[in-house]
Image 1 (spheres, helix red, strand yellow):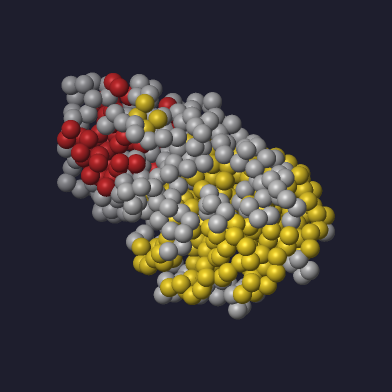
Image 2: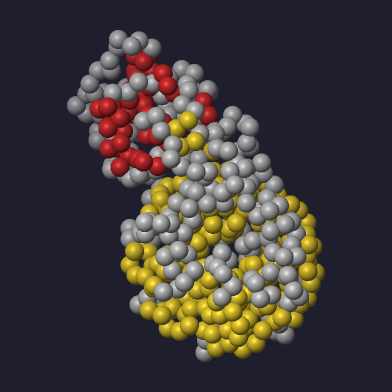
Length: 478
């Protein structure tokens, strides 16, 4: 920071001058400090926000309409905390997405692309002012020191958005969307479905495009792809990080009898593992030692066991008719296989030594992705139809459903994931039925997907945010 000669507060000056439409802030002195720009990169950006947004009764002081403060750069980057004025608890979200003005709420407001616009319809910016904000956002929404926000989060949450051909990246420290990875390659929807991270790359399946993508976590550029995986679905990566297993989407016709093995170092197909009978081989789970892969066949009511060393089919666990095994997960110690059974609305527990069923736990309708705590004693299962997160507690060799976590914004729950310390559970919602109605609707866009952030100590939703359309599979990147 440069040494100052004059210390003053541009914000205070701008607030005072905003009371008179005839007043214009003086030009900044030759030598300035960040307080004079309210932390923004330029005087022009600071002036626009201070005169039009951070005024009495709006987004400043104790008022902070919608839980949004624009008193300074830091406050703006926190986003909103009370977007619906309490109608939906802890409902907030980002207002600036660096390098993406088109998806930034602030820019959508000032261009009239959001409804309801009142009371913001009284704001009248010139085209030059609108362009100034757009350029600032698209250049990285930098602060006074020339730095873009959200550069070094302690962790990030990456969520597939099937109907938007995008991956929403959430800053874990602020729990706001910090960027959007564009995956729109086809003229029709590509449908990103599941995502995993390993060694500086993220891997994403595209249902409609039939691809597995390899994307650099630094620049979000595609570094490789494997084509020809029709209805590409779930992903499991081997413990040594050399290969990935790719199943089929649950939306597939029941005509598939294989899963793919991909070399993720050079992005080539190693093998297509053949299964005994066709169906929808969807949910997959790999033991921690990488020796055994379980493939849940949704329509065939069976779980195929794969020798993951030689990548060969071994045997089937045959389930009762209409079980519909949807998703699969392995306990951290490798001793238990968990299956969410869509047909019976149960969580099935198998031991992995004998591959036999131990117990069944009744859960709310439509169980989906499974998240397991690092000690294996908490299992979280979002229910798409029931719109709750089922909490199952393991005590020794017994399992009991101990809670259902609900929230008025939950709508068609889909994916789930725990932070490394098990403190926070992230749950995505499809919301393709539009049951959750956002406080602000964006012109030309359908119902947004959502993310619920749950404190696992209190088992309550501490924040609820919007993402792009149709939230699906997610992963947490440390």
